[in-house]
Length: 277
Image 1 (tube, rainbow, N blue to C red):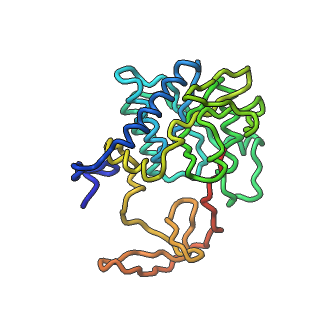
Image 2: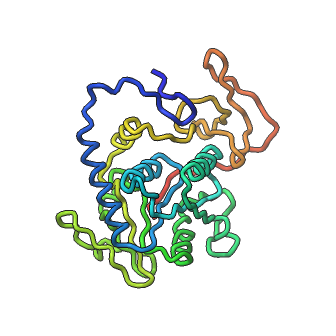
Image 3: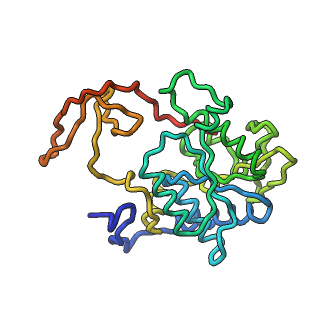
């Protein structure tokens, strides 16, 4: 079944007979959390990268405060290594919905000496935390909403929904607040910060089911499409401005891969692993 009616949008499809009750409970919990943030905090940022998790959180925020405008500032910590499709999608969503977007770049942190790379090919994702902390200090955010989930890795499983950060931006698992009976405490002293994860209890499957149910638009990058790739360490890596190909792999009409040599030197392999901030 074709799930797309246009780039980044689902077709209606046949969803009759599907039990959405577990999504109703997760949605209600997330909306309650977002309203608690708005009630307790004065200057809140919603971290929006254009990815599927942040798109779900943005939809939840829209449903939480409809018909009013979302009372949060959208913020993106740009590594400079993002796919163009994701950046275009981010800008389109912000423009269509009349939202305020703040972008801070890891590249600026590198040029200012706040981040130092061992070499140009080093992944920038681990260094996003420095740029994020600088942005929080500059703009005075007392809370940041993210799309992290507990099922992503072991470190996330220990994190509370309202996760406290000290004046140095550090997370101490022994210095977190109890969340008994869904009572959340977002009070912070100057310089401290709260990270809020409204979809913390969701799974990867829950996210995709909610995207299907709500017809949430996504960057076309998430869906099958033809693109140029290179073979690198046994993997097929998409060709971008950051990946200089030595040999292109072009799919033919019979969907077999055909190698086309190019006179371009190969770039060093990159790791796509994302560490928690």
